[in-house]
Length: 564
Image 1 (tube, rainbow, N blue to C red):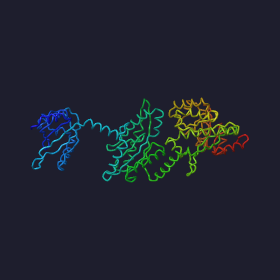
Image 2: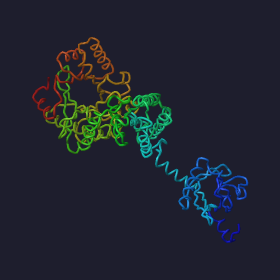
Image 3: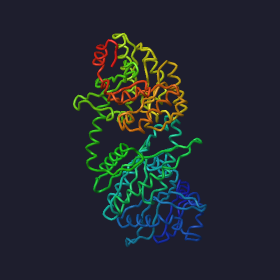
Image 4: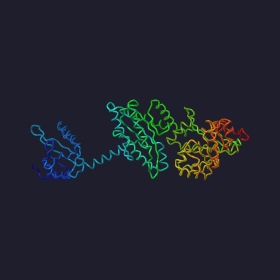
């Protein structure tokens, strides 16, 4: 084939291969510019006329039908073609190429050749793949992210008629935040990566595990046996998480709450399924965590109420909707009031008074408990100091501290600042903590409690006997007292075995130099039992219900010796 020398020089210096081939199945090459060596590793002599190999053989087998279809479709339409595909070069390396060409016709409009240009786009394609990976995969765990999940779920929903019902599961790790708080975010990230691996191992090949963010994962799966299949998947997940994870040489136990919804009965759209699985997941948490819960229609109403409370909770502080009530504590020997426990109440302008058991868990989950806890501490100390000034008597106020506050590096500084601002002596403030809070990270708890003791603050364990802590553990902490949970006092108070437990509890606490406060004292009979057992203080409706500060002041002022 004769070619002008200057044109040949130009073609050989283009960053790609110019070619002419027959329109046969092997694309038998009739001309290839010298860039063929750069592109394929083969020389033109190796490929021209299929001397050693045909160019078509270099095309990755999975792409050959795609290339043939694209070329033929363009020829049939009488238009140039463009196609992207992969080839395997002489050295076995995979390369992405972009080809543009057109058919050459004879005088009878018969296709006699194809002419075109093939460029190596491997670098660009790798960049595209990397960007696509970044856009569709979670960087931390390598799992599909929300964007990829949405597309996959829609494919499952479109195929329900043939593949059966589809399940969407929301998985939230229980108390994951404590890992971040006690071991740091790097350890938390490693834990998420290990959890992702376990979830992938228990999934069937066609199921998908995705990460939404934080400690939230999502499972999507086709379930031919409906709820039965979904339940089996959820139980496999829960079982897989029972074995400890080892991070930094330390065993970490983690569980999960799983919300399950099924399409089409629980929703036919992605948004409806995500929402309902999320609702079911929160119900699993409320039911005690470490379990799965199927969505039911009535859950939506409960979820709407919860969402409304969460929205209102964000404004409750600035709108001054919180108030404190105080329940007196009484010395069971002298029957004098020694102080009171501060109890928060929420007066919602439309819903009325909302119980703490209803809004405190929401405050903890949405990150408002720190601000609310600090407000309680400030208000309780301020009001107590005013009572002391007016009545001329020392009163100790007890304030509950949340788990989140105990792990805060600012707690000691905040307590010091509140005491300084209100003028309340440190020994007239008692902070109440739960057993489970103390043993979550005993070394850290002991350090924080020791720093608080330097301020003169009293420390007590609330609801003792309902958690995990034993009296032996208490020796590790600089505590002043224990509060005997009301369940011991109000339930089976006449039962001999229960009475023996109460007496043993009080005796052991005194042996550890700890005072004991019994909650839930409601009858004179129980009061006498506790007094005979040498219980130090009592608190309950026998003496007074929780009262607003002005009512407490009036009640205390009416007793000349403040006795009950």
